[in-house]
Length: 515
Image (cartoon, rainbow, N blue to C red; front, side, top):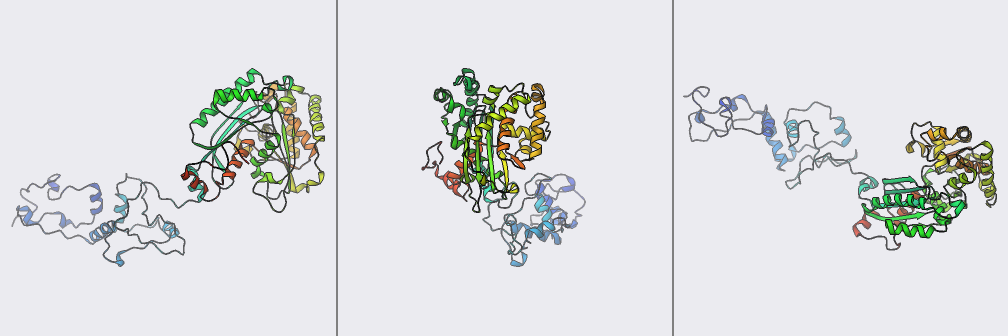
């Protein structure tokens, strides 16, 4: 009888070398599965193989670990010989807690390790494991049916909430605000009820109302700057699938003799259709944009928006039944025909003295005196506060926080006490123009405007004294987006998905219109 460990070995298809002549070549996947599963004697060829006999060699006997490997293979193909072989899964919390326990040498480790993934990658959970179970839920069998689809590459995550699940499928909305001093654009999509995610944004100081107070007309240079900024906005909107947009112009176009002529030029050169809104609409939009900053404990609020050519003030009284739209609680509002650009042009914004500052405050106080607003609308001091949305109050907040550069995330929503506001105004008044321009939260573009805004703020604080003021880095654009999304009902469960599948706009409202 031939010694299987000596003599010449017959040629074997797929043999690697003399040491592995009787062992066919296996893939890395099979190597991992059979590693340690076969007994040493099973690797050597039988005597019949060594002699070149045509009788099939007897199948080698597998070690106990090999039975587990074959059973695991049947599990993957859905062939389970009995219910006793099905291993139930523990609830999610229990599975996570047992991840650090030692693995048993039953072949599952190699099965997970060599499932067509690169070395070192994270193991993918099966379809059964991807189901999030409550502690009282029934365990799910690890076995899969034979017709089970291949598992996707990537981590299987728990089913997200409605707003997070549809975040990237939500429609896009756009809002553009062409003011006396700035041109601003926001493109956003709805997320959680009452909130949205900004997809794109643009802001540029254009000073459209420069010289308007003296001439009553928009200058050619100011119109040129504004048209160039609007071309940038038009390019951003052109490359996005916008469901609904609203583009507005405010006080500069409202007051200028050639406002309509300018909007016709904008339409010809950029393709954008801008509408001039009235003062009441502007006040309501400012309130809508800041509704989330009104505290739940507040019973009365005075919200003001200090613009470039006008300043809107809304008195809000909140009763027991609070509406989802804060603008519904406006009891009184006014729009003062004065802003940071017009006021600084009349009194000088570059070199401001305490006397000239007092003159600006006095002028605004005279305008507020004509505002018929009963004083009994204001509740106790702890139930009342101011909300300011403008470049003036955000600048004060940035200087107060001593920011190395302006950071909206730190400024928006911050509270300032009455003493802190007074201290910041006195600090800015003590600086000359170069010192204001050197501050990173002001800069040279606003250095000649910020004290005019402080004068308007001081007049408002004298009319409605408050212990605290909340800063809002938001305004008309956010109000436009909030109103459009609420009108379309996108924050109702599944509503915007149905509209998106329908492929049509809201038939009840033409493009660019809001109730």
